[in-house]
Picture (cartoon, rainbow, N blue to C red):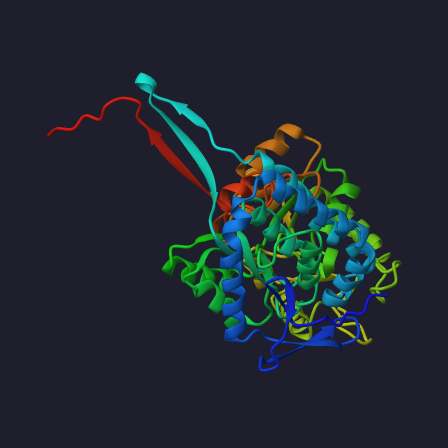
Length: 485
């Protein structure tokens, strides 16, 4: 089994770096509550070193052909797949997520991103636009410069790759700051990229809390900021980036609706609800935590859901039989517990779970509330824990109004056998990522992101290229230039 202790706290200019003057950050294993590693936050000097290294490495990297850049990214993808087991174990140590999950959803997803954008790098070209009299315009797709990535704690390997892969494919350099809760995995991503042939300084990792992220965002040498995180944090970063007219991608939170119509396949709908509420112990930004179930099938839905929840295996995340693990931290556990108490206080009916499990670590039973109304706190605010809210409905127009009555717009899902209705509902959702008869799929080939308060821009797919590159137009006149005097 992999040793979770990192070589050092940061990865700068192609090598591990340390400065003991930085504030100590304990790395706590969510399954036991024990400290498994300790790192130090980046000092201002280290932050400066990382940005300077990226700035210095940028010209040569941007000058390489897309084919050359892509070859390195694809090689890194191959290495990640070869080491999937140890990377998955590290992800489990970092987050507490069950190994059964991390083996198929984390480093593999990161490798997919590196492979996809490695393959697309050579195709990044401009176009030739013909004008009258033989004049023409050609366009050039150019790198933005130094990009800053700020990660969340729920998918540390995946998020590092989702941000690095398109940025590097376009010829940018990056400084990535993981969440201080999960600081280990991004260091391995940097290590693998170097092994694959990435020039020193093109991808750097600095660890630390909000002050480190703030310093990165505010630096004049930074051209772009991409963050995955909460809406309040995203708004602060957006404001700081705007002061320097920096490009931004914001992948933020949600309170996403999932609508289950009376003709839905109940087993599939329940599978979608489980994936959209309890995978990663409910700690996924796109989760469909407001499950609107048609009144005609509500009782059958809840009965079968309770039966299937009884088969959840909660235990040691390193045991591959475990399919439901702990929450990431004591703080996140407390937040979820407070919301459960609020749901009971406001009159929601507790159908399943709701209790903290008496064992080491931060285990909370998967929880289902029924008879939830739209005005309840648990139906309005993002919980980011294993808490499902089931709401009743009878009419399509009514449920669409209720589903969209939120400041968020990250994701939405619908389960129905009526495909005309399915596409009609998907079109009416005010959300950036929608699902029909499935939930929480995130293939790298498709754009992912939200609207309203849930974000700006898109990650993954060809769409991400537009957020990590600039289009330059060059006008060419073949004849004389006329002027009024």
